[in-house]
Image 1 (cartoon, helix red, strand yellow):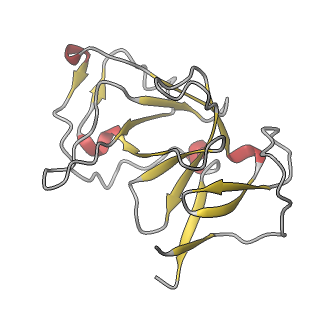
Image 2 (cartoon, helix red, strand yellow):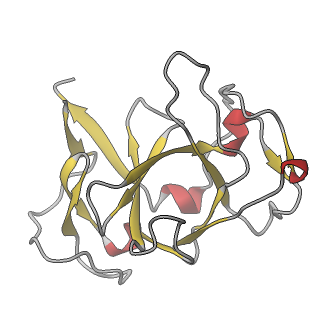
Length: 175
């Protein structure tokens, strides 16, 4: 397994629990990528618990360089829990009930199905609010989502600037 480093290096940080204060100094979080420094502005709170993960509330949104458009939603409460995400636009998904002006980022969970095309779980998007530092899962009916959920990369589907500022960017070391 490759090792990773934050794209921007900083001071060595203590191994205290992750603070959610926006001005808090970086703290070390145990993740699927190893220990990583996470600043308060990089902590995302789940507005309502994800089904099956009710005890987990704090997360980091991690992008590994050269793996875009995919991101990891890493639990900061349990290092073993992370979810692979991508912007819904990369799967041709559009949601009638979700107001694009008030929802800065809609993302979908990706199931891992070997030997089958990459698809999204389009009926349970995660909606990120970068201003509040929160996200919430929305369950929608099949007739409330447009698109088939098949992966089609979209060059123009860039992440909003306020969301980009909250990402933890990793660079593979010696890859």
